Length: 365
Image 1: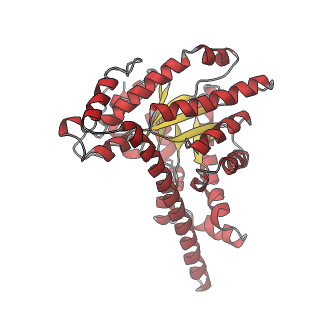
Image 2: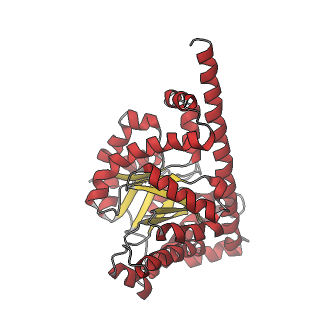
Image 3: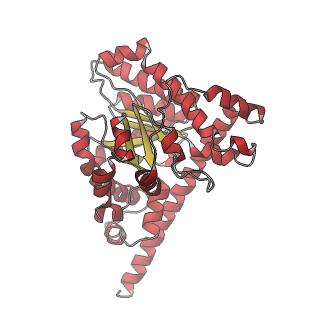
């Protein structure tokens, strides 16, 4: 059996960390679903920026929307939603087969709202309604304001992908927000089966400390943090409070491994796929990592429920001068800033493309 199919048998979902109109139009996403058991995807501003800037796939759409008087975020979200709807339709069979556990396409609220709880709540609701697909899940960052928005959005019945989590503590805060939202729904007599995933970013840890620790520790920090978080996740699922909501029809807020493409050229290109095999989780892979694991990935030991040696490994990083708690906050702050930068670049490239199309049109091209 192909290793990538084996992951599914072991209880782990594989999502694609990419979406472009070319990927959809060429049938490549359909091939990934068929050949690589891909059951969902995530998107972000950088992905859309690259697609719009480096292709003509969106030209007609941008041209038409400009004629309709649309611009800025309104134009951008309409373009993104068209792609997400098509992707969601491709994943709809698995969404139905799994009764809504899997088969999601993920779309992010404006990163400009990272510190605006009220704005995030309104945006998440509006995007989910505009998507008009039951299997579009809305990304909200796990910032302080985001945690408030997560609870309120779950209570409102909006499926949420919590993004920009870098530590066990940040994960637990988002999980608590999800739990409060579900408990409030139960108290109000509402259905409890509102889905959520919590996305822990992995490789950025190793990129950040690569030049700050001995060679022997390189490539180990992200996996240790993931193991520590997975232990907390499994303990949470077994807790009486969570067992109560499960008995009432709620679902686990599944843990999702994000940023799992290998950045270190000296490390295995499937490092984080092989290390993060665990049931009740999702791994989001860039195209290159997906193909690499399908080609030469190995199925090794499952992640231990108790975190294995994570505390011992984290202690070694502490001895090397790495304050993981402070670094987690730094990474989340920098991640939010990078998303804002990418969003502004995406808005800029979209408007630049629009200006080019207008100029070409005025010249009769």
